Each structure stands twice: as C-alpha cells, then as structure tokens.
Image (cartoon, rainbow, N blue to C red; front, side, top):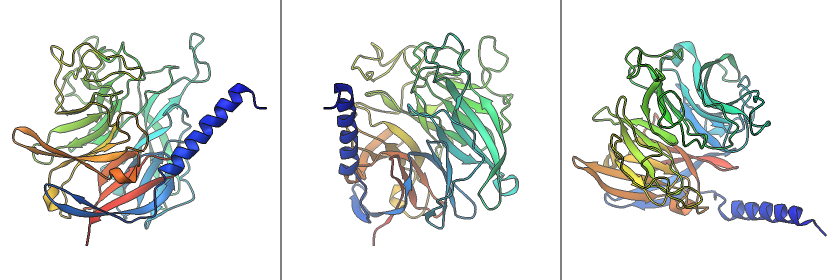
Length: 398
C-alpha cells in the first residue's frame, strides 16, 4: 500500500495528466466567426511540440525564434520546429515559472546578428537566504546568432536587475525595442510587496536601456538621488505585454494580476501605476491586495479584468489581412478566474473616448495563450504555453 504522501503525489500527477488530456489541442484547422464587426477566421497549427514557450521573434528570412522556459532557444524553419536546439544560451534558474523568457532581435539584426533575451539568472545564495537551492534575479542577455541559426556566440549579460531573492515564482519579463532604438524591459515583482513603490529597487518596474545596457540620458530619474536611473515607470506587478499604439505612438502595456486586477496601461514617462497600494485585484488566497483601487498620484488603467484572465502578450493589429480589425488591441489570456482550460484572446476596440467593445476569441481551443504577434505577412500568430505548446496562425476564412 502506498504511503499517504506518495498516494497524494500520484493523485496530483494523475489529475495533471487528466487535465492535459482533456484540453489537448486537436489537429485543426478550426473556423470561428468574430462579431461586430463580423469577421470569419480560420485557425490552424503551424507547428507543435514547443515546451512552455514564452516569446518569439520573426527573422528576416521568414523563420521564427522561440524561447522555451527550460532555457532552450528553438527555431521554426519553413513552418517546422527544428528538433535541434540552438546552443550557447546561458544557464537558467528552473522551476516556479522561472527559466528563459522573452526573445527579440536587435533592430540592426540583418547586419549584427544580435539576439536579446530575458531569463531568470541563478546565483550563489548568501548565508541569510531562506532557500539555499533557489536564488535568482531577472537578467537581460544577448548573443550573436550564426547565419545557420544553430549557435549563439559572444553571449553576455547586458543588464542584471537587483531583484535577487530566494522567493520562488513571480517571474515574467517582456522586452521590446522602441522606435528610437532604446530597449524597454519589464522587471517582475517576485512576490515582493515592499519594493514596487521603492524607486531604489528594480522590482516591479519598467526599465529603459540602451542596446548595450547603459542608461539613456533622457530617462526620467537620471541624476535623482535615491532612484535607479534605469527606471521608466514604477508600480507594476508583472508586465507581460508591450506595444506601441499605431496612431498615437504611445507605449501601452499589459499587466498580469493575481486573482483579478489584470490591467492594460498607457505608459507615461516617470509615472506611478499604483501596485500594490492601488489594485482592483485579490491575491491568490482571496484577500484584497489593497483596500482601494485608486491611490493619489497613481494612474488608472485603460482596461482591467476581474476576475483575472492572466494577461500575457499583447499587440495592436496594423496589417491588411483583417481590415475590420485595423488598430484593434489583442491581449493574450492564459486562464479566466484560475480555471484550467479557459485560455483565450481578447480583442478590444476603442474610439476617441476609450474602450468601445471587447470580444473573447479562441475560447473553444482551451489553450493558455502566452504570446500574440502580427507576422510580417499580416497574419496573427499565437504561442500556446503548454507542455506540448504550439504556434497557431489566424487567417481570414474562405
């Protein structure tokens, strides 16, 4: 007879397996119809077998780089996942949502072949660390990808945040190059409720860096005592989507809340977004994060979700394949209200006054959506964050 603890583990493992089978992605393709405006779409699988991907980057030759949580960088060549991983990536801290996260190409990639990525960097725990087997922070690395796209060389840390901690979880970092060539990097909250409002800490901040990791001279807190000069804005929980509005040029970002309080914000230079002093959410134990959703000096979100949809990647659509969706916002969601199998995409339409309508897409696929991007061909590409993750493509039907 199994000991009680082993029996519990066996039941948990069986339950996880049962859930994975229940929400296993089919072969496709699938047809859906969006409403108001009416758009018929076809969703098909480009490739699958990607293990817990976080981010992707489209290459000039049409291939796609994908970052897996285990620390591996993969490439999709001609619509097929190369079984051989790209070598040269640094060692990553694994477990508790850690690992390799986002990946982007340098704007001058065609000439310099530089690939940038965020990852959870392991370190040597101090004697005071509560967990001697887990000590890490978020880092920005880069390397030079050879022309065959098989090896990263000249790999180095461009920037390492000061969020060293033995607390497990609370990871997640998105990076994007801005039109001016600087790089925005979100630094997660690491389940730290003390430092998001502390300007001397990188925790729960949006950072702005030059491509070599140095500080741009026009950052809002340069030269200000008690402030980290890399900080662009403060009071963020877990920013996992970054995109620029195609009409206004404003920087927008999505934040992954706890059990409610997911947000989309318009990011202002030097602004405070309130976390955790002001939040619409509850923590995972059901307790309110804050007693008020609004705080003096903190900017309100453009959108929020209660309960949480576990917001992830985000984009504005600017292509010509879906003219009815021009300039609409698309936000990935991994689950609604902590319920497995409820991942989807949210399409949001705005007018001059703000949000006009919101629609949920791809619900029937029951997949955790981790990233969503418009491809160079104008179609919409979706990464599902599963053990057997997939790259999906959305095209007009018919």
